[in-house]
Image: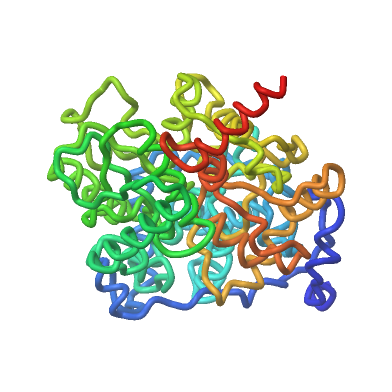
Length: 518
């Protein structure tokens, strides 16, 4: 089976039922591992530089601490009855066929150690309850398969007991970090945020130059001087956005969209060099200390600049941390204006303006796009937007429908709370895991193929930096164009008619001619 699985053809395998049960390929992904963090990456986060000598004892002790700190973790490890409801819910299992990527099997890698050392039956009769000793082989399995979980939580939606594999994965990664076996990609990024303020290691000078260049581009396009202010004290809004928005397409086009909307709103706003990163990779490695340290940068920036509101840009896990944990990690934010959500998503901000009739659009500017929308996991299953339940699903779609004439949803069982992961989340967006990422993207690519064939869809919008980066890489492997992934606010930017712009004059001229002809 494993040999068959190695003949993976993305284009061929990207056609078919998105949720089709794969043929089993036992051990097919056992060798898939991210690079191990260097001592420098580990120590910058307060972890041992390499695997400690007494790693078994320390790992078991750390698991004990996590069980004391998190009541839910113990419940998740105790509650599973292996009913099989989650079996085919993981995109990595659907894409690879490796049984260890079934959520229940992945959970069991930690559960069997928990039972051995923390339950009476596991201590006395380990063979009866599936308990095992923590050995080097088990640790190798942990490092491989707990880095084949994007923490998307789709399996938890279908679990009758609500077992959250993401929390179990985060616990396992936390334990591995604590004994000196961390992952290079995530830990290196967290260190950059600690030292510089963003994932890319973008220095303030470079950030300022980037923003100045974007201002020139916008004025050249529209004839309107739209500012992207940086570190401006006394602004009403602090915009905190993923650093990808300063770096590449389609992220930068989304940033231009934010700037245009904020300009048209008339509200003063600023970016911050202190908080030039919305993403919080501390969640991916299960480190509350790292999460808090990153969150506190945002609080400090907001206080130093004297803002009254915080708005987050398009980033899935950044919004999950902001919506669910920001006040706990770095609050209270009692210095902000509580007449507005703390924090607020940029889609909420734009949607409110649309509802108030404060934005004018020329939807024909997006007629080349036949669009669908990818619900990003951490937004869909771990957060909310707006005042109404389900706002995280409805608000982005309402924004897209306001700016595009051609919008079509993918199959109902692949979107909203059942959305399929992009395949690159959870700290797995690294080149050495490209085979895993490609296979993990297959269910979403199949769903996209279906709506493309049925409705002629050409582009997919998303509100997550990781989703956009992942799809930019994998779309060409499935027969789509690289630029078929777009930002929601890229679409907003295309259609938005700024007051005093050349587009406004053009539209008004056409309206006048039409009136005269009538």
